[in-house]
Image (tube, rainbow, N blue to C red; front, side):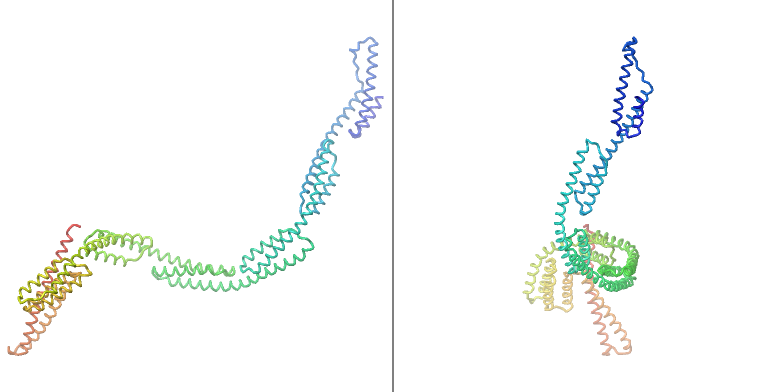
Length: 580
C-alpha cells in the first residue's frame, strides 16, 4: 500500500505542484490513515506483551521516510510556485494599473481623435493579454478599468462637440487674420509689413483646422494675399537696390568733402581747426542720415570715410598738443596780468589806475585763448579785480557828481553876473573886477562833465570878450587873455594833456620863428656893402626884430604853461605819496 503511495507521489511530483495539490492532499490523508492504523496495532501488541502504553515508541520504516521526503519536496515546490504566482500577479497588477492610467490620459483627449481611439483599442488588447492578478484586487482593478473606458467614450463625445465648435471658431479667426494680411498691402512702412507678415503667418499656423468643406477656398485666398504682400516687399527691395546705388554715390561725395576739410585744416590756426571740426561733424551727421549701400560697398566706403575722419582728428590732436604747450605760456602771462590787476583793485588813484587797468585789459585781449574751462576761470578772476576798482571808482564819481551838482548853481550865478557886467571908465577897476570874476570861477569848484564844457565856454568866452574891449596895452591884454586861456585849460577834463599840447604848440612856433630868423640873418649877407638906410636892409632888420619879439612872447607864454604843468605834476606826486 505504501509502495503504491510512493509511486503516485513520484508521478505527481513530475507535474505542477499547484496543479496536483489536491491529489497530494488526498494521498496525504490516505497515508495518514494507514500510518495511524499501523501505529495503533503496534501499540496494542506492545501493551498485550506487557509493555506500558506511555513507554511505547513507534519507529518509522524506510517507506515512511521516503513518503515524508516526497511530501516535503512537494511542499517546497508548492511554496516556490506560490511565490512565483505572487510575483506574476504583482507584475500583472502594475501592467494593468498602467493600462488604466494610459486610458485615463486618453480621456483628456488629444487633438488627434483617430490616434486616441486606436491607442484605446491597443490598450484593451493588452488588457486582455495580460495575466491574472491577485483575486482580492481583481474586482477593484476591473472596476477602475471599466470606468476609465467609459470616461474615454464620454469625453470623446464631448470632444467631438467641442471640435466642431473649434473648427467653426478657427474658420472665423482665419478669416479675420486674412483681412489683416490683406490690409498689409496698404502699409507704407515695409519693415512694419515684414514684421507683421511674419507674425500673421505664425498666427495662421497656430490656429487649428477649419471645416474641410471650407478649407480649399480659404487656403486659396490666403495664398493670394501672401503673394500680394510679398510682391510689394519684393518691389520695395528692388527699389531699395537702386537707392543703395544712390546712397553709395552720396557717401563717396561725403568722403571727398571730408578729405577737402582735412586738407583745408592742415596749416590752419585754432579757429580754422574748430571751424573745420564743426563742418566735419556736420558731414558725419549727414552720413548718418544716408541709408546703407550693398554690404560689400558699404564696408569699403565706410572704412575710407572713417580713415579720413580718424586722420583729421589725429592731426587735430597733434596740433592742439602743441597749442596746449603754448597755452601754458599764455596762462602764465595771464596770471601775471591777474596779479597786477588784483594789486591795483584797491587803488584810489582813479585816473592813473584807470589807465593802468585799461592797458592791462588791452594786453589781456592780445593774449591767445586757452581751453574754455581754464579761460573762464582766469577771466572771471581778472574781470573781478577790474570790476572791483571800476565799481569803487563809479561809486566815488557818483558821490562826487552829487557834490559837483551844487557847484553848477554857483557858477550859473557867476555866468549871469558876468553877462550882466558892463565895463566902466576906470581901466584898472575893470581889470580888477574881471580878475575877481576869474578868481570866483576858479574857486567855485569842479563841474560835472555834462555841464563843464558848456559853462566854461560861456564864462571864458564872455571874459575874453570883456578883455578884448579893455583899453589896455596890447601886450598886457595878450598876457591877461593868455592867463584866461590857461585857467580855461586847467578847468578842462584832461588839463595835463591840454597843457602839454599847448606847450608843444608854443615850442613849435618858437622853432619855426627861429628858423625864419636864421633865414633872415643869412639874407643879411647880401647887404654887406649896402648903406644903413637901404630899404631892403631896413625891412629885413625889422622882420628880425619882430620875430625876436614873437619868440619872447611865445617863450613867456610857454613859461607860464610849464609852470602850471609843474604845479599839476607836484600835486600828482604828492597825492601818490599819500597812503591810500
